[in-house]
Length: 262
Image 1 (cartoon, rainbow, N blue to C red):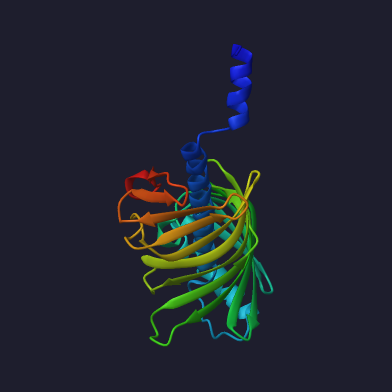
Image 2 (spheres, rainbow, N blue to C red):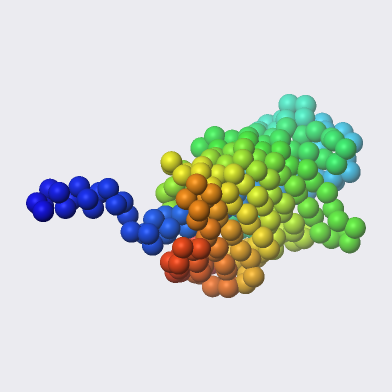
């Protein structure tokens, strides 16, 4: 067999199975990193508001007035308000849960529904450290019966680029909970995601992280591609690495952008 024939055979075979699945893992994590950063911005838009507010104009006025308490340093953010809509201009801000290097414009429309105060957030090319966000999301804000736990339920059809360089489009929903100090949060979500030519389902369960730290042990991401019959589970153990395993056999570890690496 000639060298040319060998090269053609190799090209037809595509990447090795383990290499191909590592790309799946990267895309699943990039999808999640996009969602986490989006979530922190939606949280920022309602963090100082009363979820029982019945006046969206007053909610918008308070959100604009307290933006400097949510984004730090105080002078990194400026706001303009018209009725129930606030535009946030961010320049080098740190947001909730120490989401860093926020640069761009975030528009939020406040409304009141049966489930409480709503925030409809949108942005294009908003940067959060290594992540680029296109946000199209609506969150419903409430406080649990314990009087301490804040809860945000979000429907999203946004997109973005994750820290590993993958362009992600996704449709789905997620729930974020946190306490009044905004130091720690939990995240559970369910998404239909597209990255390049790949389409997959992503489910996040029991993910928890405190500001500036790596994910707590116990959370997991299940990444499924039915057309390839591939099921990949990613788990967290509190370190700066996640462990992954595939239904087809390959497994490994992958570094996370957290802690000192954030």
